[in-house]
Image (tube, rainbow over all chains, first blue to last red; front, side, top):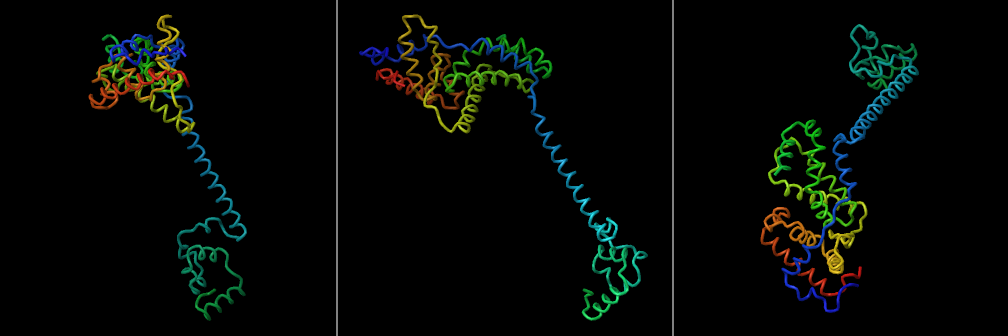
Length: 145
Length: 187
């Protein structure tokens, strides 16, 4: 400890203490820091990797979207193949055109069940036994189910 | 001032031109203000390496600012930029480490550069400064080491002039009390 026992600072007035502090030499930054600052100024202002992150995120998002489209497409194709109908029927939003609907289908009112059912039945007519059963059920219960 | 002229020229040129000229302009700017700003950052930040990083950001910030209008008071601008950088560093440190350091690792006084006759006093004052709260250390540095007026200090700290003056008196009193207590080395 360098402090004297009589603590000279205690009796100093403000001006003396201020003079003492302001007379002390101040630290200087290291010489290497000057080079670092000047070198940093010459580098491009956009840091490396700054744009990489959003680009990567966008790429990942597009990949996910693409993967989703492929998976759903494959599932639709598999389902359509098992049902023996074309894949477009699964995603049909409109009822089939008048000429594509067999008369017997209109007879049982199947178009009202929705465009997908109408397409499905129009594409793959049921056999005679199923038709008879459906018609009988419809006549009996009114819902064809 | 020559440096103001250089900086103003950089501010009115395009960014590419400013960057091309930056090697020269920034070097002049650095030589004129780096030491003052470094001491100021040492008063605000607990670690010298943080002060160095903040100092670098201050000067790079000047470059990034080119083309966004003139700087009317360069010294005030740089001190304000240094203060902002110091607060940003402190915020990062708090979220990163969750522990606040009690005192600065270094004061701005260069003990190595002191004359032998000054050495003991310098050590006493250095230790006492490090024990002051940062806001008191800051105001003592601005007044005594960097010779800013109370008006300039008030503008920098966003305080009324009278408040800056009374904060300074309080800091000086606290420093005297630490020095007078004789236990300023026990850290």
